[in-house]
Length: 203
Length: 76
Image (cartoon, rainbow over all chains, first blue to last red; front, side, top):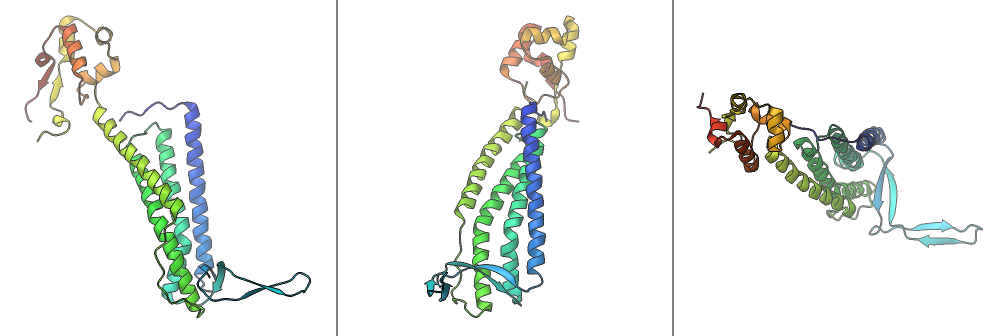
């Protein structure tokens, strides 16, 4: 396989991509460890909840003691302890998945950067990296909001204030769009890889 | 069904044809308008495909037929 020539300017950009990707993988790993430390003891686990359909009352004290103002909260973070196995697993999955997604996508971009640095552009390794990142983003765009909703429902249930409704499947628009765009780039790379293979060894 | 690279059975006789004519690869590259690297790939049987234009140009310069340049070796 013949590598293409890469200019020194391009090399610097690819090194930057490798470094940023590596850093993002590191950040993801730190995030995973932090979440594990926070959640595994099963005490005071912070869970983001949507209180739109949960009856609640919150009073904000006036600054000069002139009375209180009732407010409606839509999003809040509740701290729950002693969750059952399923709610705990859901809370853990909801907390870990964003970091795992970040790590997978960052690792794929690091692989791309390393491949580009060597002058290998339209090769199967790059194609696999792009498709993996795209699939990770698309899966995460559905799994993250869905798991977060399920975890929130489990947390509210543990507090005895659950809505009792089954959580609907959620979709993260920007993430799914990013995944779709990356999949489109992956398709272009797939064509490029085939073109490269077809013309390799052509004289 | 033929395999993608024909099992590498196509042999290029460029070496022999050049020797018969006392011509160097560099000179042939110059006359044909193909890089020495590409001709070297062809000469060493590492080519997987050849353009008709390259084939025609080589045959014109060496005044030979395609069958003299490329031969299919029998199955091992």
